[in-house]
Image (tube, rainbow, N blue to C red; front, side, top):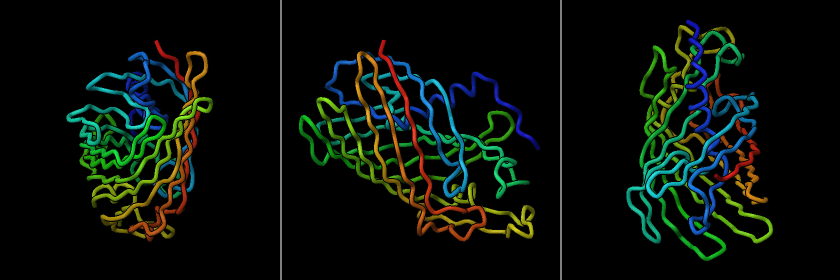
Length: 267
């Protein structure tokens, strides 16, 4: 059954959160406005292990509050506990929906809905000076899949531990490098890689997905101030070698990537 198109306001709110995840936040000691607005464009794959993707273009808001943030690295988050080294917060991110008719490997299968992920996040600072910071982060998120109309379900739990390192340069802006792992519960794996027997075809065998290791990501974010504006960019490489579901007929490519460019202005 075709998914009913979402009202434009819902599309905007959902899409806006995405760009908060792919542009870097600057350190707290900078005196910046709480509010900012930006516009960006980028390219990403349709789902982990897909062999095709698409360009996204959208505006995005930013809010930098003391206890609540729309942060350009961590998404939407709220502080629970914070000291010089240890930070405990909640975190929200999401993934775009995709029409299965636009993905040859999934043709005839249910569409991929919005995937909303919410959960606690632990951050521990390993090393920090006035010009660089290295920290460990470990988000654990509960996933919900929905079309905001007539279909909502639990889509498992995600684990995303990793290391990030930020460098600040007077003339070059700030770089943040990331190296992170992904692992998921059975429900999440089934959402992307399961092929129920009723959707099996001569070229798409039935497959039962299982929990475990998904892959890793290596990349960077860059932010450069320019006369009241921030020019931001991001590039990430996703390595899905040793994916526990690499035998799924829906797992098509072991390397994915994403690239984004955006600009923001403070109010």
